[in-house]
Image (cartoon, one colour):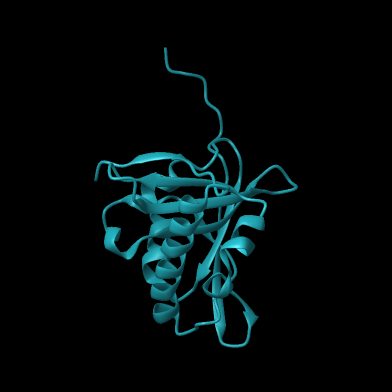
Length: 160
């Protein structure tokens, strides 16, 4: 596991927002190639549009200040967490960054997430992290998405 610090990201800070935008575009370009669909909305989103989203943002930040990856989620009306985006800079692929970020999803709440059904690395990640695959769906012709959910672990009294 690389030495990174997971911390909240302040997208009102211009350099932070620019770095998050760059990492997101690079990560989504890889996903677009994997799933054969380049119409992923985040690929066309401006920095200002990204900032306007009512999301909670955390990032994995390297010692030199570079953002290795980020996770953004919104609070669902039912009290759950809906992961909006999980992106890792391609230079940081396969180093545990996505798993590290997912470990910081707010605990004790149901979680939902979607990804391109043909995005094998993301599908494997969510399955490895205990998410259950739901129905695949096609929001637009030619784009098959996989849905995942994870319920919080039931509380158990400590062993004595």
